[in-house]
Amino acid sequence: MSSIPNLVRREIVETAKTLVVKIGTNVLSRDDDTLDDSRFDALAAQVDHVRRTGRQVVLVSSGAIGSGIGLLGLKKRPDDLPHLQAAAAVGQAHLIRRYDDCLHEYGYRAAQLLLTANDFRHRGRYLNVRNTIQTLFEYNAIPIINENDTVSVQEIKFGDNDKLAALVTNLLEQPLLVILSVIDGLYNGDPADPASRLIPLVERWDESLLALATATRSTRGTGGMQSKLEAARNSTAVGENVIIANGRNPRVLEQVLAGEEVGTLFLARGESIPAWKRWIGYSLPPRGRYVLDDGARKAIEQRGRSLLSIGITAVDGEFTKGEVVSLVDNHGIEFARGLTNYGAHDARRIAGKRTEQIPEILGTVPYDEVIHCDNLVVTS
Ligand code: GLU
Image 1 (tube, rainbow, N blue to C red):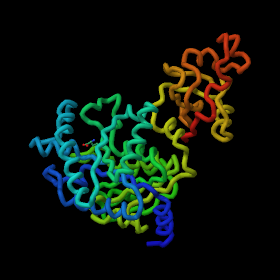
Image 2 (image 1 turned 60 degrees about the vertical axis):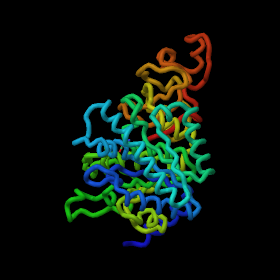
Image 3 (image 1 turned 45 degrees about the vertical axis):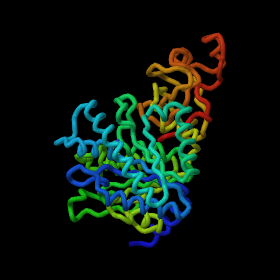
Image 4 (image 1 turned 90 degrees about the vertical axis):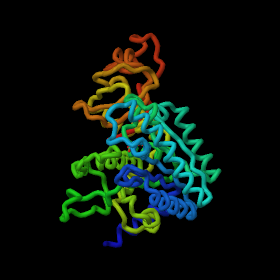
């Protein structure tokens, strides 16, 4: 073990004010799909440990569907939505009860927040989630977040709780995202192969890391290593650090706080991006695309300029003013996102034209910029 990563880890922990801890279904379950009480007790003790260091904790916990499957005595995970939603409804009640019982031993109350992707798309709701979490901190309650599986259909689904945890991380100040799974971290090969080694530190995100994820789907949860890596990619891109570690280790959070080399640490890439820009760049699904010429791409990517109509070579999709549009280069690769000042119809008419020509075409110039640089986030 080299000492350099430990120094890095200590520094990261010192600056973290809130731990966002994502807990996978397998971390909480026995092999027969029932919830394992000893895991909850260990988690509550660790939450208390973190709180005593003056830090806040937010849990993003899976386990509703897995626990519902056990409680209803189902032989296997249902394949269809109504049965999954029903299993989640039964399981979530039990899950939160279990958290409340074990946290109460240490004087905390569990607070349940069930969210859908829509809650992150609407700025008002997004801010409400943030305010609720802050108020729960005042009350010394522990927010326990899960997807609202009983109402989530495809269009409003996060997909998996790793993604949800990355979005929740965006809401908080000086967070550290810890993703707990039943694997020790990211390996440089198949984790089942004894020759494979755990990677303790990823200094810079590289897309080739995704190839290391075997993308195995567990029987209970969703996601696998692939979705954990995607969450790590999204969070490090906005300037946060992420640790993927084994949640069956009953001291894992204590070890994280001590700066010990547990799991895989993914270092933040660059400065932390302001909350408003994170919301534009990472919480909202783009409604369309602007294809840009090379000059416009460079002006935005390298010089932080606004997008002007002259740089747009094509407009794809249907969107209205104020929606998020993806900015792609002439190969179709996305490099930025922003809130558009023009709807798709007008944008098509002014694409490729100089700003001075806009009044002749539209009869008015509501905005000089198609996307103002304040509402633009480079994502590449
Ligand atoms: N929300 C799901 C549950 O509580 C889990 C989704 C996931 O593990 O990614 O069962």
